[in-house]
Figure: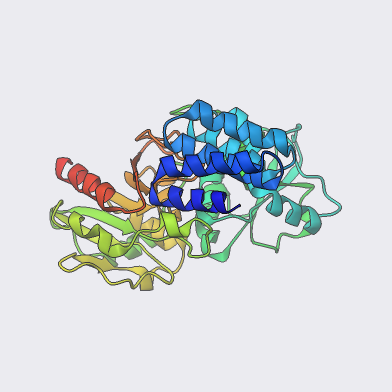
Length: 378
């Protein structure tokens, strides 16, 4: 097992040949069992990072062959497939990412059937969600498709999302998480299962963007709060996600890493960050206009974003929101991104107005310099 742990450390440090060697050494010592599965999953991710997609998939399939019920092995294969846009094959494997969530909702609704794609004309379908806000924003695109199938769609969401969700889905069918009256719906579906259930293929241009709009009254209020336009580009910035997320150490970016951007654009910079990192110290000479303390919910964020020319963001809900609104957004991705983002392409089928910037190493320096160059070119 020590070989596998060291392989993971090498992977984090970008020392990929060492990671491969340690995984292979672990497999020599333990060709079967849990250690072998762990080594093969690690090897799959490292080989993908080295550009060996065929070898990566072979390692993931080998892990599944050893332990057919291992959820991490299936989730790794799903991630590999999704990185390459092979979504129909990826969806069943990725279900293993959300197995705990599924079990929770099955316990919550022991008398209900979970929708699995069968005809739902005339049925009352409750959409439930146990993942992050960004995931929910991404999945809201499927509500119109469900209604086209004849379903009455109800939805639960956190309080901070109520305004945005009601604007996107209708004001009568949205409830705070955990409060939807049982008598109002016939069956339920997890939002993260909707791409699979709706037959999502990831075809570019078929995402129905924009599908979220800012509230007109909120937009007018924020128009009076924001500094007037003075000819400079208005750019919003968000640098950190939920600190409880298991991948937060990779995806969140230190605010001081953005220092090169200040001189790269003649811009008004608006901080869209909320939560525990909203008051992170800005780099010297970075003209950041702080808004976080006045942002009450996602509807406020949407009202601000609607008045910006560009959003630059780490992999957070702010990036999803801007993309869903059709606002130009540059997404800054870590060296191992989430399943939904390509590992190489600069665009994404999820949001046509989004541009992807990829880090090749744990440090953000090279990526931020790429963003600075893109700002100068813009």
